[in-house]
Image (cartoon, rainbow, N blue to C red; front, side, top):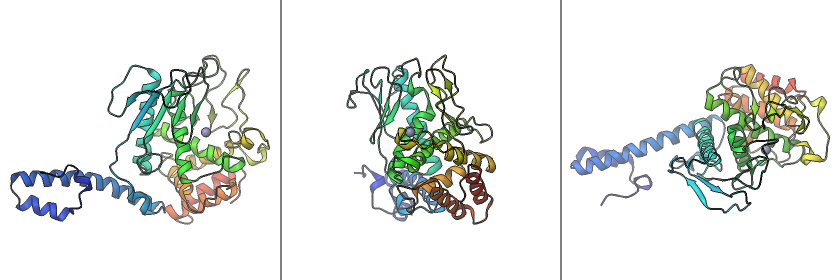
Length: 355
Ligand SMILES: [Zn+2]
């Protein structure tokens, strides 16, 4: 009998090659197909390792990269709040005709692919974690959440927001919180919390741009453009390009995000302004990506991801500490004094954070 699971076989390639050369027809076929599968997996892995090592990340992290396959599970809470509601769509299932379910499923897929193909990351935890989502969560809930294990999507009230699953950037933002949780973590309070929000927004914007293959110059740099209800005066939840301009609406209020340190908001609300002051690093990231040109995820995004994963990133890091590490990572990845390192220093300087 052939091994049922060639990937986990301990037989090295050279042995399989020998079998293919010398064995009979049946042996040859089995050996060649095993080699084909393991070569596919290995090339994905070695690519991952190359990227990881270029990022200054431990190669051991890539060693955890097994078969690169995603696993998505969507549950329907039917406007209740039971996160253990029945599964309505799982990996391998086709569209079920429910917009929220199918949107969540598709956005999970796009986000997973971004993490794997761009960042060589195997799901949220870099160890193949299942992407769990609950749709129709609560009655007219105007929000989407990452609860530490899964994503919960409200349907929106229809007054402020529409179905939260509509937006890929919102979905990638929430899953981004999962990545930050495993790689940071950045404490969700004050400036470290605003950095947490910032990185989630950067993931949101980058996944959106990647899915549309947009350059930094072509992109709108908005997060959640699809979810504002009709009649709401605004263009999105947040603008990384022009923080503070995303919306100005009688019901929703005004976007309060600053774009510069001189306007840093000191508040006890919003965990010390995590969704407010994230405008400052958001704008810095936009500056960096714009100065570098091309696609945001290729250089600015890699530098950001390396910063997030660096062992010296402190849970309570403030903007300046983060900016310094960000600059160092640019130097490690692209060379000290490189265009990339300069762009990072200039990007932070433009928002009043001197390295
Ligand atoms: Zn968030």
